Image: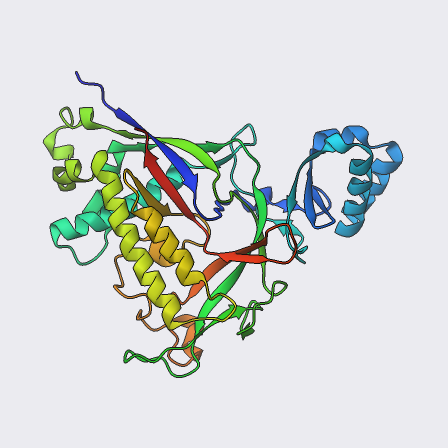
Length: 379
């Protein structure tokens, strides 16, 4: 019997900041997990912190927790940490302290290392394989059961993706929503609007970027963070699974497995990036003029030999996580439903998440589109 799985190892590089969230109860809480000082988020080791607390410190700290007084809690742990530097695990520079008291934690393994879970990467790959199978089978609708199989015969059983583990700490990066709003009535005949920034939960859009309005803080893997990932293909299982248990899409298995996978991802990402460029060309904003250059640079990197770029995690949006099959043009989607019906000719999927941070000098703000990673074959 042949070995059931063949393993392929890839390098994985973060191209733009990536956040894949853990459960909300794991968020970092201001005054408990971190304090803010001189432009830095300072994260503490709570075990070490508790060991350094006197009985008076513990009583005062407990009272601030009972009173839900985050600022007082932060003052106490900051004072202890300044006396005992080893209690601070790491410091992350950020342009301004956000008014929100919690920071979304990036998912990590049992040792505290940030990871890109194999399930997240496999999910993104599955959508792309599904779109590929649509073209092979002349299918017009993305139905995962029809294209990929159901729970008993899914072709995704033949794909295993490992976690990518990162040994460095993440950084706190802020995110803001960019919205394709409409200065004039939207039409399918070429009228365009402006890209605006969302400053409030409901409404409150404006042309001018504002770093303090409706902002989300998240722990993120930043550019040039590197790891490795293993992808297993179950070639050996093909010969032993009975025909009645095999989904018909397995006839195309060799077309999307192993060395063909990167080529398929690369083609998908090229189309996706071109559609996103068109979106930002139609809905521009003066505070984010270099978005086209950012996308163009990612497109160039996507052309590199033996590699491909894929998008995942927070900010990927509807188009990236669904295989990008439904709309050929990201500026001409369906009319919005629900609450959005009150807006004149509002379109679906009109928002994008933009990450922003500072270069540590305090005078140059960087805006970018999150979630892009590069997978490269090990030669």
